[in-house]
Image 1 (cartoon, rainbow, N blue to C red):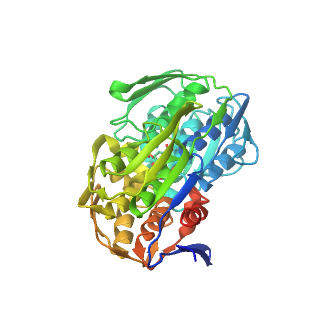
Image 2: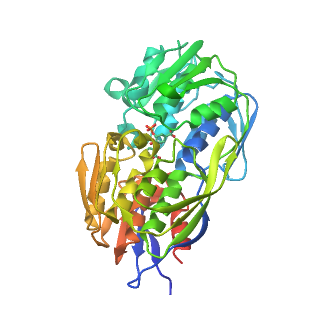
Image 3: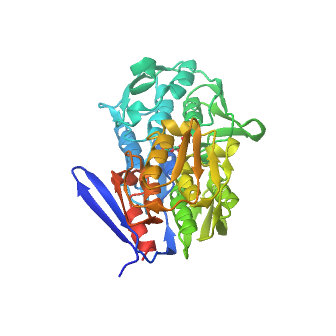
Length: 448
Ligand code: SPQ
């Protein structure tokens, strides 16, 4: 008899995930791999499409978000082979040479796709582009990139003064700027740097705290002149740049590994090894936060693969204690806060997460949704304006919860369900395919 029943059901156009825990409890074990890093996958497709010559991508994430990026750049003239994890081939058009597409570019659910693409398109003088996305993306703020792009000379229109998609871009010759971003955001930083590739001179972005640095690393590998000043969190690119196609190897996504790190930490008797996970220091806030909570996580076989640090992560169950998460660590674990909240539900004491107001403008309002959905399972979670307060140690009982069409919420709730008595039904569970199409299959595999 299996320890855990996981059933996927189709209802209308949605999927329900039913997780039933056995009365005797369960444990997780095995060696697994997680899909390719989403942030690196987007950037590999985009830089490959913009570079001259051929780029090969090994380990690409086959989630819905990178598929949206690939579809947009095909419309813009890049040749991108069928997507697979072994080897995707991209033949770029050369910097500044994207085609004017004959149709609307659709970024789907992906904030990274629309914001980075806006930076690339804004400098294509004489060409016109229109960009949209799904209902969630059309409600997410674009002014954070539109404002600095306009300072560079970009012409962009959209609803609400150009702050909401659909957006229209009339490509212009851009001028370089030094932009002091009010938020630590890799999407803002990357958008401006990508625009700077086509502006003559030095374009600098300074951010209040360091956000993920995959763009900087990959731009340098593709041949752009990139200067980083760590003391001031500043990055400068010099344009016009020359990008040359490169081989890219995408490591496993630490944001996806985070679900298993928390699952094995909270379910008694568990031990997992997650192989080949990217451990770029701008992304490892989740490891530090879990270790602060007392988690038993070991980094094994640390190495560097194509310019990104990689390790195998071994995690064992242990009792967790509450902690406070705030300040500069937040941008280094921003996408892992929903699953961190799940860890906090099973930790002793009260965990406080602050300085994370950005969570309110992700694929859903992740603060409000996590508080509501975890409370449905019996947790004690209170919304703060910029975070969550979680009183740990209450027993959870299965209930119906909803992903709000947000991939990270769907998977976080499925992990919470592993420690809830009885059956938990997660509605709109198909959202997981945005970043982790095989999530349910891996859940079944590790719980056997
Ligand atoms: O791409 P999108 O939709 O914005 O995806 C998310 C996610 O949870 O997968 C955010 F909702 O990740 C962002 C991340 O939060 C991906 C990203 C990147 O690749 O540059 C950077 C972060 O966003 P931001 O706004 O802090 O730069």
